[in-house]
Amino acid sequence: MKPYQDVVEWLQSHPLKPIYVDCATAVMLKILDGKCKMRTEEKQVMRYLYRATQHLSGEILDGSFHQLIAEAEQSADDQLREAIYEKRVLVETMISRPVMKSFKAMIRQQGLIEAPDHRPPGTGYAAA
Image 1 (tube, rainbow, N blue to C red):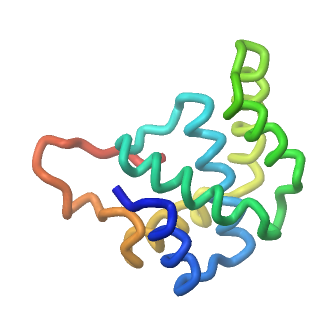
Image 2: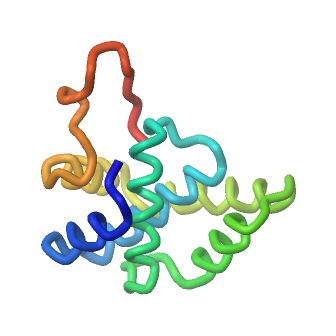
């Protein structure tokens, strides 16, 4: 697993386009609502990526998403989990599938997370 500082350094040499900043936020929402199917280590890297990019401007998402994520990280009751789920579904309608797939491919190709074909057999994989 990459420590936070490794992710920050990766980000410095691989600046994200604003729409990819939105993609990192979308993945964080998916992690928080329990629907993300990434491996535990990948989820942690994506949490770090979100933290390292949350101050950057996205293309379509505003700061209200960051406030909701911050609240959910502190303590998430059923009502807050439902709000996260609803926001995540909304975000998935705002960011096209090809853009999200491109984001995920880029972070694999650039070495932030392992590509599926570099994982030990039997570990399974499903995209976020």
